[in-house]
Length: 154
Image 1 (cartoon, rainbow, N blue to C red):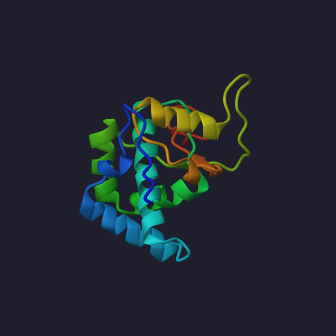
Image 2 (cartoon, rainbow, N blue to C red):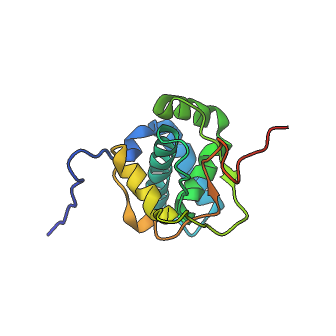
């Protein structure tokens, strides 16, 4: 007996956002950097990183944060600068910056915690969330427009 989980109506598998040859390079980079991760899991990670970047670029200022595993995919993507810049332009219409944080997350009063906020933002732009990869958040976000951890203009 085979069990197949269907995607909710109106959502797109974010793996489809990444061109196959780029996906291969990114999966290789994730597994090279993290040998404990299988190729299939790395593929899922890259897909969720793509969804995170797309959501971040389409909803600037939301202070979205990747999970620890999704951050592996984002880092791999950023290392491939030409592919990453083209991807950002295509899916978000702008470059999505990586901004590490040194502080513990502190959501404003009444705001959802970062993980819930990010997962909701990904769903809101129409991408399927792989909940298994979103169990913890990482120490970086996409904010680059005046947030507390944005680069300071010099």
